[in-house]
Image (tube, rainbow, N blue to C red; front, top):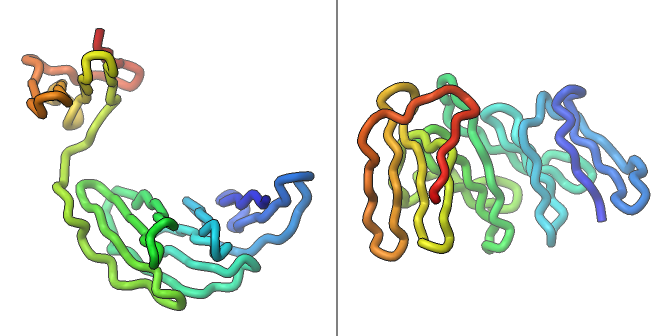
Length: 172
């Protein structure tokens, strides 16, 4: 019944009562980028740059995880609270790391058993024909790839599909 907000402009995390939007608490976190709450334990996970904090529902730090530094890129996080123990996933560029929540510590982040990929742009799907299209790569020279889900085959459309923001492609 609470709403947890990463208030980056004020360097804090705010907890509000969802029912009446009243203020419950706040705690200091420098420029929080992401926040998640474990639905069973109530633990609050907050990303601030390359650091992930696990805090109690009162905002007291319980554990800290420092992610590897990335030049010109930001980590994107997800919490798998259905796993026991909970898993923190961190993706950046073509890296995907996983770290187990061990209560008062995090396990060292390890590469997930996944294949790195290039930048994916503007995916589009045609559920009727079970096709997925996506531009892969950045700038000029990127190509449109079309995956046929039924066969697993990928077709690359000839020619460049590079463009500025706002250009899209659709299957039809």
